[in-house]
Image (cartoon, rainbow, N blue to C red; front, top):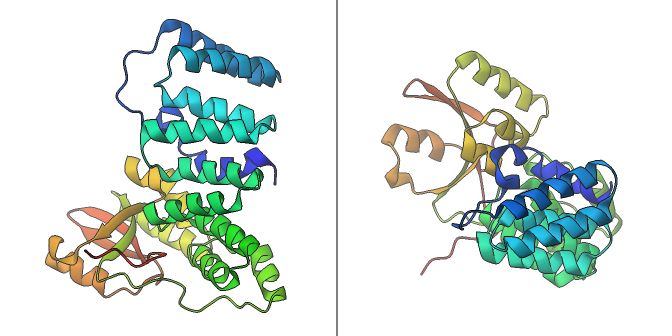
Length: 289
């Protein structure tokens, strides 16, 4: 798998949400000259001239330093050209503009991993799965960093969670098996009584049943959420947060509490909509003050 193919798996669905998938901070109007340089960069990339694109993106970032999309594009071009350290610096600066975003942290983690910064990569991937416990690739690459650090038991746990979320990771399982590590049957932490939920809200019963069947046939929840979910479900791959049962409608809370983490997805009808839901669980137990 090439460097960019890895990221395409995660962000292809996010690009349609605007701003390259970045949550844009409140910034002043982008100068026209910066927009022109960004357009030139796209043309250079399409024509196979990444060094010219790099120049144009540097100009765009200099003219509009608070525009997240330009800095992310600059980091991507630097990474593709082999300047991993510079790409890391741009991504770290980007995260100061946008705040913690799971898919941006994932990209930062892959850049750090490529640069051999294993401990820093692990930190990024751990942040990814803390923010979004349904991010299967985040768990897979967390397993990779843990494996390289020699923490084989934790690597097995992360790989098992990726598998539970629909990412088999056969190569990772083989490498762990060669070390005598079997994937644990219950790799998740205690959820503290919260309901960690991923969901796809649908309006048509027929479509809801079709998606349920596609999940049973092996398609990933994240992929279907990005294709058919509401805007936030598309961005997060369906993860909607850790819910407090007492804040939900009693009948809905009872249905969700009856599910065990990583049971097969279920359909719940609510107020004329169809909720395709799956209860999941966190990598680490939630903090209690």
